[in-house]
Image (cartoon, rainbow, N blue to C red; front, side, top):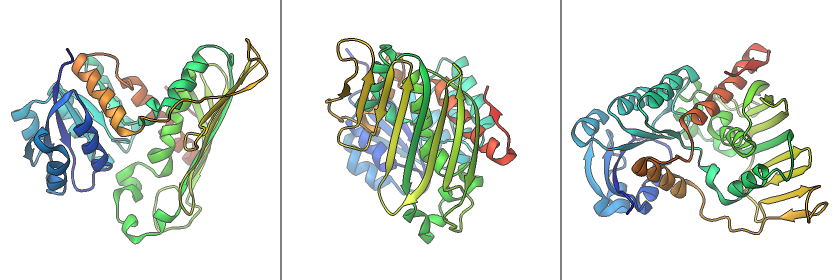
Amino acid sequence: MAKNIKIGLITHAAGAHVGAYLQALAAAAQCDEVVLVDPDGRWDDEARRVLGDKLKHVVRDHKTLLRDHRPPMVLVTMEAGLAPPVIDDALEAGCHVFAEKPSCVRAEDFAPLANKADAKHRHLMLALANRINPEIVAARAIFESGSVGKLYGLEMHLVADQTRLTRPSYHQQWFAQKERSGGGHLIWLGIHWLDLAMHITGASIVEAAGFTANVGGQPIDIEDSTAAAFRFDNGALGTITSGYYLDKGYHSHIKIWGSNGWIHLEPMKDQPLSWYTTQGDLAGAVQVWEGSKEPRGYTPFVNEAIRACADMSDPPISNAHSLRALNTVFAIYSAAASGRATKIQ
């Protein structure tokens, strides 16, 4: 029989995706109790409405949660610069941690957290939820099967709307201030695609070069545009364009070339995955994935994280891969600032 656990949801008025996380916790079968940490009282009513009887307590600081309620797992969604000491306290108390990205403004603030999680045999899972979207799972299986061969190269873009950046209300949020957020589009959205590039191919990015800019000219000190190139540990090369350019919606794709074929992902389209191989019975034909795109998003990802913590099984993202994604982003920022390629440990 599956084990059920108590979850501590640690947030504040400016926490990101709190509504989505409440829905995910409400749907998670292995979460039977939630304790909300909400110092501002911003989420009290919504939590009671969404969680119903699952919400057992509301407290105003995370230390009270850890001391009095001792949840096996906490979900932390906070302003990036405020998150590291809270995550550290949770790990010290023996909790597994699910952390909304980026949860730091420097990689050096996250690395000791990953090390502590390893030492305490706890999961530290960054919320890179696209990993378990069905088309991503299918693309990873295709690559792992060897049908497209050795990784040769990769090209991807993730582009969102510039419109959000024009709103005065956005200018005041922590997302728009580098000192509080760590960066702009790349650390908030582009990080998902960088993680997927490594997750699908099984290769790590070990060196990066790039440029960042505020091409839209809005009164913010984060980048709205990144163009970067990188090298994988097997010698293959890749590129990413990550920016706020559109009036609405998203443009996205990931193209992977191998020695025996290619994989093309467009996750936001109705037919999100196609591939081609020179091997086997269907050699030379473009194949189109016909699977369902559901379930996807935060609910199934949080569910997998809770399962991993309850059962002490493999998490949807490891401590090392959570840190790897952040190290890659900050290496691109370092390269853009220095004008030199940056190696990634």
